[in-house]
Structures are given as C-alpha cells and as structure tokens.
Length: 202
Image 1 (cartoon, one colour):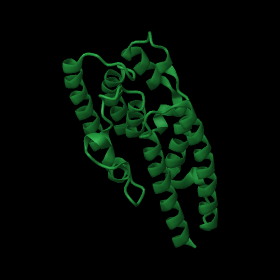
Image 2: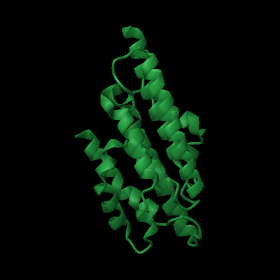
Image 3: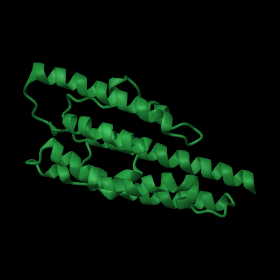
C-alpha cells in the first residue's frame, strides 16, 4: 500500500538523519566510542531495512529519498575512522584539504562534519548545542524536521559554529594556556565550512 510505503520512507529518512546528527555530537570521541557507534550503526541499519521492507514498499533503504539518507549513514561510518588529525605536524589548511578530498564527504551534511570535528576540540570550544543552551535532542530537532527534511537546519548550524569559534578565539586570547584537545579545530572549521556550504548549494 502506497500510504504505508510513504510513512516507512519518511520514518527511515528522519531516523537516519536524527541518528547521525546525535552521533556526531558525541564528545569526546574515544576509540571505544567509535567501536560502539559502528556497532550501533550496523544494528540500526538492519532495523530500518526491516521497517522499509515491512512497509510494503518495493524500494530498499538505500533508495529512500533518492538514497541521500542512506549515503550519509555509510559516509558517517567512514568519517568515524578518518584519522588525519593524528598527524600533529599538519597545518589546519593541510588537514582541511585532506578532509575535503575524501570521496565520502559529499554524502555528509555540512553540520554532521562540523559537529564531528568538535569532538576533538579543546573544552574551551563549546559544542553548538551547549553554546545555544539546548539539550542535544532539542538541537537535533532544529536540524532535522519530522518529515525528514534537513536543508533548513544547515544555515543555522553554520551560524552556531561560527559563534562558537568566535567565542573560543576570545577565550583563547584571554586564557592563553590550552592543555586539552586539538587547537587546530577552530581554524579547520573556518576553512572547511564555507567550502562545504558552497558545494551543498551547487
């Protein structure tokens, strides 16, 4: 039945985007967290495949909403094990170029990439939902609408990222000593952000 098919597809789109957005906010992201998220992603994907199948639709999960939600789910798995930041000698520009060259980046919403990068940042660089004094779930709700649409949230996510980086730079100039996290993150965000948003508009 067509109605059941539409409902299953909408639920699948919303669920994938909301899951990935929540997962990208995990901070700090340690090795055990990565492995746990990878396992959760596999179980989650299997559950959604069943949902779409039981919805009576002739399409698979990878075809829902032109394949975009599923592509992001797969790309996020790649992102979890991206390790360019391990090279502490690489400049923010070098890290940014390397990241933007990854083939799976095109399948991620800019906000997913932004939030993932925050997981490596110094504590002084607040995550956008903390900066906006919102719970993670509430913040994700501003990015992903119940009908599975996500475009409206991307511009506001970038504005929040810029505000976080601006506040961090002011704190850094006052504090000076930052012992934790990767100090390059703010600069990397400012380099990759405009390019990711430009690509998304094309």
